[in-house]
Amino acid sequence: SVGAHILHSIAEVKADPVLRLTMLLHDIGKPQTMTVDEDGTTHFHGHPALSAEMARNILRRLKMDNDTIDKVSTLVRYHDYRHGEEPTEMVIRKALNKVGADIFPMFLEVRRADVMAQSGYMREEKLENIREWERIYRIVLEKEQCFSVKQLKISGKDLIESGMKPGPVMGEILSALLDEVIEDPDKNNKELI
Image (cartoon, rainbow, N blue to C red; front, top):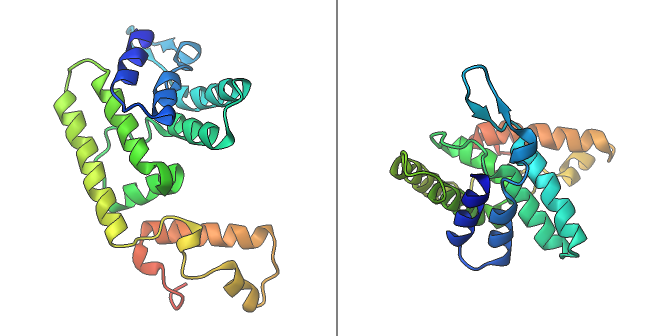
């Protein structure tokens, strides 16, 4: 059951408040998103987003600090992000952009705990996939690849100096440039941009 899975997953992470709260709340939206198709297969489409929203509301009611609320709700939202996908450097850069470099190691711990709290079916393959995510994550960091606007070689200041007025359009341009650089890190170069 979802309840047993949640309790099991809490036991699989270290005694860190953010990790424990994440595991407690990561599947809280499953009952509301449950559907069963014609062949009897159960689905929980959209449960990470709903669980994250519910987690944020619960933690606010409990008067938790904003940092904890933000970290837990982010980890809950992305706990299934590209689950099981074979990682590439681009996949990791996209995940780092969504999750944030500051909590990415926690994201990997959440994934590991989630797998450990599931049935033993293909457990070793799933854990190997997480180890591969971690290995490629270290490569992305070692290569200092760009995955956030702050890491772009061109900044808002550069755009202003080129004659652009500050505003929403500038943010859209920087976001589009970041998307290009996440796809191809060699494009993080002022001359190419």
